[in-house]
Amino acid sequence: MKASQFLISTLKEAPADAEVVSHKLMTRAGMIKKLGAGIYNYMPMGLRVIRKVEAIVREEMNRAGAIEVTMPVVQPAELWQETGRFEKMGPELLRIKDRHERDFVIQPTSEEVVTDIARQEFKSYKQLPKNLYQIQTKFRDERRPRFGLMRGREFIMKDAYSFDKDRDTAQISYQTMREAYKRIFDRFGLQYRAVRADSGAIGGDLSEEFQVIASTGEDAIVYCPQSDYAANIEKAESLAPTQARPAAGQAMAKVATPGNSTCESVAAQLGLPLAQTVKSLVLATDELDDKGLIAKTQVWLLLLRGDHEMNEIKVGKVDGLAGFRFASVPEIEDHFGCKPGYLGPINLKKPVNLVVDRDVAVMADWVCGANEEDFHITGVNFGRDLPEPALVADLRNVVAGDPSPDGAGALAIERGIEIGHVFYLGTKYSQAMNATFLGDNGKPQHFEMGCYGIGVTRLPAAAIEQNHDERGIIWPDAIAPFTVVVCPIGMGRSEAVKTAAEQLYSELLALGVDVILDDRDERPGAMLADWELIGVPHRVVLGDRGLKDGVVEYQHRRDTEATKIAAGDILSDLK
Ligand code: ATP
Ligand code: MG
Ligand code: MG
Ligand code: MG
Image (cartoon, rainbow, N blue to C red; front, side, top):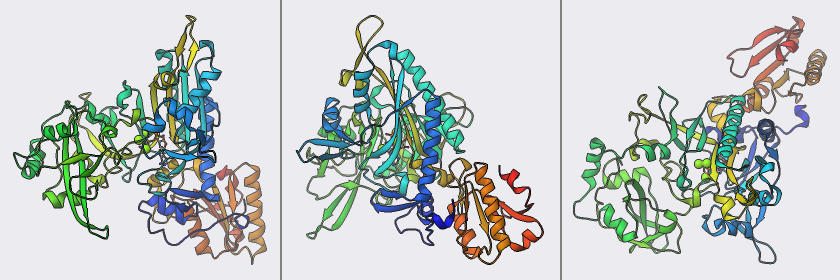
């Protein structure tokens, strides 16, 4: 590729709404261009990265025996009605009508359609196991689209679905995918952890998330440095004994006024069953003035014991107040005069008359995805569902330093970005859609299924969070938009530079190296700054002076200085 024929559009300034470094750098490097909230153009430079991610994912999926298919982005609602998800899925599911007023959805995931394919195609146990995958556009109407490609509304996902004749072989299919995921993420050269994830009401432990370690991640990961124990915070909590935490408990006791609503009474008011687990809700109520602006905000910590389903609760408004929204931690601190600590079964500061309003589904989209059984809420994802990530450990039942469940040591907590998820589904979808095959006993049986996602467009963003410096992106070779950039200095003035640069460029091309020749004849400072921002890992600079001495300058994006290399050696060095 020649830069003059390509689209390079770097920016000095990051957009005002960019909070994290990957969003800033991808925009400044001209890789993405925002079209709407959570909707981006993948510009040519960015698309090259995405295509490389796809190629690696595709190669490893094929190697693992999965078969590629493409399912429609626009899907008839009927299939989604069969599983009940058309109604049950929260507002993340984009529903549309065609000209005949028929309902459709834009796929956020594809269990229904793939199960429909399976029930038609896989007639006998002899055809199993099978794994169908696609690399396809998804749409989720996220409550908080943000961070550029990290949490888009439109994004690309690789989603795979396995079909097996029984539970035992389904476990093998799951493990095969898990291994493939490790290969994939190893190839990207990223630091990641496979963590156990909560599988909600589906049961069993077979759900793992692949988390890229990054301080900007929206998820909290609990792990034990002394062993291979690793789980996301929801899972860690569900396994942890509910233990009293005197220190934090005392902090909360300060805010509790005895004799008021207790979590039991609030739960009773809401008609919630009480169970062993303690769940917390942080709510804020807004009093609006007559212009509809927020006049006064009140913040409540609700302490609910119970295995409740938020979908059923749908708290719509708080008695007498106009608005309802989630609270920020500073607001909580402000209101209660202390940091939110351990949420135990203590009293609320004041009685809260919560009115259950079934028309306002304010909570239905707290957790939503392919993998959340009927959107059963298994835990509030602080940082994503609530705006303050830093206090996760404080708000949770599990904190750093707790003993790890395997007894190997103390737990540590770090933040991560979910780039992949493997999930054993069992017969949930096959039963709902009556998808059967003929078993070896001659009787129809439901498929045992698994689903496996990778965030193809989230991945480059996660890679940048881990690999950047003050000058820009540092791409791992595997997904760099170009592997090598050839930068001739003063190409317009010097025939020698022009000839040498073009020769090196064509030789590299002939070797199959993904090289770009910067033939724009830019000033050296601007040219080199562009490539540092874009993050091409290998750079060769050619200038008149060096060429006279028979040398060119090589610099890896991580190097602080260039190295002079004999012009004749550069080719074999870059191979
Ligand atoms: P999250 O917890 O971040 O909302 P999820 O658990 O809802 O993700 P899955 O249903 O497991 O997502 O989908 C599989 C993969 O798709 C995720 O692991 C993630 O990498 C990617 N993904 C999910 N939502 C988005 C999004 N809004 N933008 C970009 N990638 C996404
Ligand atoms: Mg989600
Ligand atoms: Mg998730
Ligand atoms: Mg997930």
